[in-house]
Length: 366
Image 1 (tube, one colour):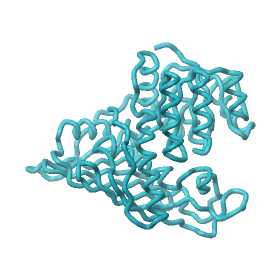
Image 2: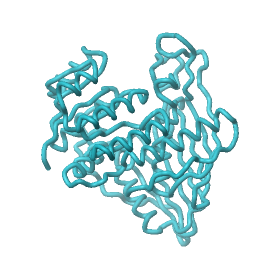
Image 3: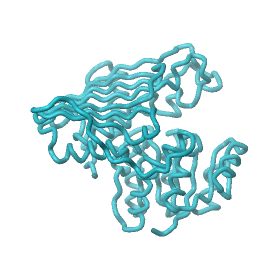
Image 4: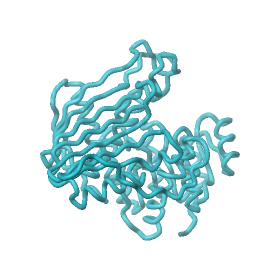
């Protein structure tokens, strides 16, 4: 495929996108973040020529063919609209925006510009999840009764951890649901269809924490539980936490008339990024289902491993779409579909009751 020029805005999780694009033959020509010294160190590490501290200047001066947005969600809408208007294709990290209204504007802007616009739902791409999805679509479960999904991590389990923008709802939109739960929402929608109603409960692990700068208490949830109903009638439970000591995994278990599928991705072992899959039918117990290993390479720190495996697979689909004029998945429309559910979660938390999930939700692309 043609080698495209790429600029990356935000170098926290955004750093993982550098080896992902480089592994696919694209040239990362610029990076941007407020801490210039850190940005220059990252640029030197990966052989990137240009460093910026302001995204507006970067878009104006570099004119990249692809823009990766990995900033706090507060900035996603503004950057995406500017990048699309400038003719760039856009890959935006999740959650797509602060609200579904912003996400819809981003979907519309991409359509007007005729550019490829993709949401960073990289956890669709472990080989075990790809097989899970294929088996669901082939009917291995039959009519699905219930789906149980969880995403547990320990990043903010220690009270002494320094506050970040992820604890500030004004910057992040959500806490654990935006960090982690949005991936579960996407995986449920991709595999099983749309949410129609839900109820949620959530909490903050250490109410004494302040947002960065100490201006006010942290207000983004550290753990959240959601019970929902899908359009098919199946029930769903989601459990997320970024305050779970010793935990780093996500799982999905689904049961139906023909059997059960149980997926797990933990962060241990040399090939953890491939995931694990177990299955049962009406005539068998739950057993391990072998999955094909990814080719790798998988060397480096954890961000680089994620970049060279799950994000690289997403980027390959993104670049194919730019080359062939395809609509990629996961698209901005998929990001909007998840955002609609996130909005309902926030409303349920505020009202402390069941909420209908506003529709129509976008059609899921496979």
